[in-house]
Image (cartoon, rainbow, N blue to C red; front, side):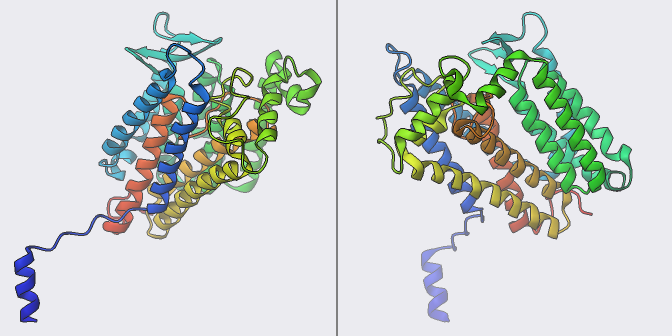
Length: 389
């Protein structure tokens, strides 16, 4: 014993152990970020011949901003997010409304979705998804009895959701609207909305989305093209047909990194919405399943964190983690579904991977908040993880 004390005195004070973190979540997120950077480079180097690294450099800048933002967010106690929920929601509405102020909003490809801030274009709908999850998580804690016992209890957040969705649809952005609605509905269901009320809500939301499709000719064209892209392969079915060709060329193990052909002006938006098709061509079925598995790990860890927070009675942290898991999982599912022809074509990025600074930054913030919840649950026994039941 004496020898042990002498040795410790010689070596100096013991080095404190590193704070425990969810390594599965961190490794999966970093793997998707790294693979995304690699694939964005592969899919975009040829797009601007005199500036081959234009998209790669911008993607790297977004990763750096996302990393810095994640570090900052990871220092914010979860209780603070609960206090700011309503404020963040109305701030998100303000950002959505500012897009339509003459001289502020920026239009591209027929859509008004961005607010120029110097060299950066702010896409407020991406941040609205984050704010909506935080707000609904707090609402479910504050109004738990109302949500489970009265129609008005779950109708109130739906009215606010409809307002936000209407502003997003005015841009127009059908894909983000679908993700926003699906995430909020899933979170309300997990929050205890009675099944019959949830069924009515689902029918109303489905009817509204169907109506939005039917009143828009170009969305109807996308629906018909999705059912049989080869019927009009030179027009409405072109994008999906090229993506399917990419997956077909990839077979089991792909043609090799950088050797894909479809990305070379055959497949539109190869570095953004159809990045998965490039992965399928260059890394084959194995690469595609690896990416899907990595997203599965993130969803698994988010739900695991949410379940642990619920067990300890910290419902706000639980709902927020579950909401993030639903959001990341559904957006990844929709993007992959569009790429393989399972769902109609719509503009929606692959989280943590596709080119698109706003989507990438927000996804990094989500991962940081999940890791903060996990950290508080492990090191402080949930003391600061939000409201208890």
